[in-house]
Image (cartoon, rainbow, N blue to C red):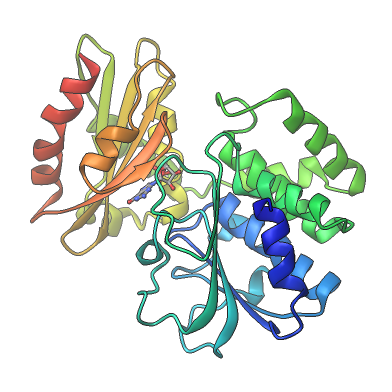
Length: 322
Ligand code: 5GP
């Protein structure tokens, strides 16, 4: 049986009435868009009761997605028959601990290189551009129509996880999926304006600080920068402002690898690693207990301050880049 057939069996089982959808902390467009498309599949085509949980608030730029307001931030949700975890290497990455999770059946759907295969069904395919591509295939496999609300979620997932259709995970067949989603009614311009075209004024302060602190190593092949707690407070910089910082540095001429560091919670720093495509970064991220893809990966590090975090990691990155 394929994973889609196994998932179909679980969905068709009348005893499975309540579903919980989880995704990784600090969710991106693929996590949120994909989760909402999956929610519509289960609710509208199979009459299931569905809860979506996010550890963090939905970023402003994804609030236009239909039903984004239904995403819960409270862990005290009713017990679920089935939990479906999207885009997460392990349960802890969702912000839910394995003990908190009270469910009879667990399904893991992911397109990351690094995944612990922790569920009853593990559908993990790192060749897929986005989890939203996999959920599109789930709709097709189950023979269900994608409605406009679901199409927008899937489109946003693919748009954001392929870096606006330009990363190496783009494949010709993705354009066929996009064509279908646009024909269903996705408004490309409206989506773009929401996701990328609404930078706050504080974004300018962020970019200024990012550039002020940027350093180059390895003959300009490595760019590294950070934002500290003081600057975030002083300029009221939001999580949205910081989005895409590592991509911004990666796109500089001669840079092969970029590293962006930001505070996550007191004493915990989040690293975002990006590569233009020659140097692989997933193993480096795994060596710090993180993960991701070959050319876009990340991890967290506990240290006293952000400069310590940078000084611990920098020699290891230089080792990989030089
Ligand atoms: P970003 O830098 O955009 O947060 O993440 C880049 C990629 O690495 C994403 O696919 C993301 O899921 C993955 N990633 C980032 N941080 C972590 C982490 O702490 N653990 C794991 N397993 N993956 C991560």
